[in-house]
Image (cartoon, rainbow, N blue to C red):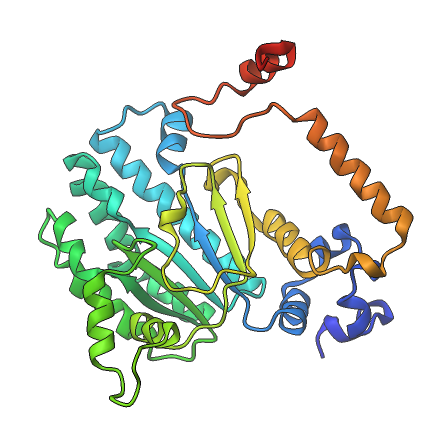
Length: 333
């Protein structure tokens, strides 16, 4: 019997109640307890990760000039290490389905040396070398794809036949029990191409006058999917258009880091997100003590007043201290 059932005489109801457990206690729980809590409160937890900022980290940590072979090699190593760590944390802490845009359309705008060095290196590390495949097997991760896999040929400058290599990896991951699924995105946008919708509609049953969004989703991903639960993104450059298409995101909890993903995301960060998603957001204010509610409102008001002129947004190098000082001195009129 796991510690989840016998930890300090805490029963299931107590462990899944935030009033019986602090955030610090949640941090200390073993993976088995976390997974049991997630399965109790949010069965089949699904998540999108929009990871970004790796190029900036390579420049800041190593001082390597971009668009050089050394830069591209270090980038591929950093990205692969980060991806493996991210998958390990998410799936060990209760995530069942993960959507991870891997090779996006923006790669077509990168320099040729980046496309010919960094992308093949990442491809080989994840889909060819065997170490990742063993990692997928050990954690029970089924690997699937979405988007336009055919278009990876447009960045296959080394003639590696990346599409076939990726498909081989996907097929290999389907041969063992897989309680988890990762969908890697290839050349995907937040919208679906019209040709795909028309093709899906042509396969609809004759008696139906229109095709349902659920049917298009099933045709796109190969299976029906539950509504999305979490969206985790890093920095303002992880654009919304990077989100996978056709997912029901209406009730998803969204979290955005200020720092690049590699620096911001770790197990403690994700457990903080989980605690908020599972315990804090679902709380019904009508069941809380009125004084507690008012205290939260006052805290929120104080936070807004303190940060009323802080700007988080696009720009080559955000100059937030300047903007804050300028506007606090009356620069906004």
